[in-house]
Image 1 (cartoon, rainbow, N blue to C red):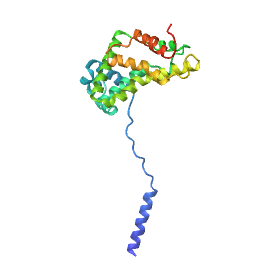
Image 2 (cartoon, one colour; image 1 turned 120 degrees about the vertical axis):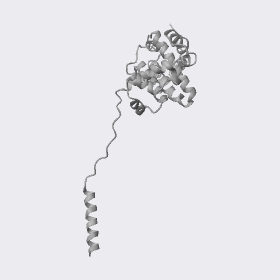
Image 3 (spheres, one colour; image 1 turned 90 degrees about the vertical axis):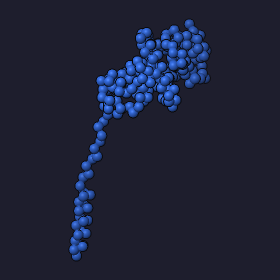
Image 4 (tube, helix red, strand yellow; image 1 turned 135 degrees about the vertical axis):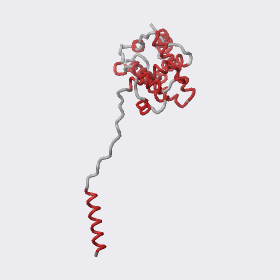
Length: 220
């Protein structure tokens, strides 16, 4: 009888525990991304000044006046931070929500050329030099760098080419994907390999001497 009573008490206690509400699991503190732009700008500055080999995450944290833990929580490696910083730089260069629509392919392409100061051009050359060093140390990062630098401009060119096809300016059977790659690829080669700035003169020569003839249009 005693054993039966003990068993009944055990069952009752277990059922009581099941009926009790389970406390929700505590979530970890959400990451604060409000400092990201400042940190990414600082990363570009340090990369341009020291090169990839001389750059450290601690230096970036100090430049951004951010805690080292904040940077390390957000980016697990220097390479990841650099790729994100360059991608952010390219996004700021391309306002994809407000692309020019001039009515001609050449007009759209020329409208994308932005005036740059000598200092800005030199800084970007130094940043790209840092990317070359990074890729030479870890070739596996080439795809990420391509996505950050080349693909955003390819997407813009693709839009311009499709518009030109829709309005009957160029042939519908032109190779949009290959043509969209022309200017970003040549610009990247000029900066990364030749270490020369991509200025207005170079871009106009590329538009009038390569892209327009490739789609059957004459330069003005």
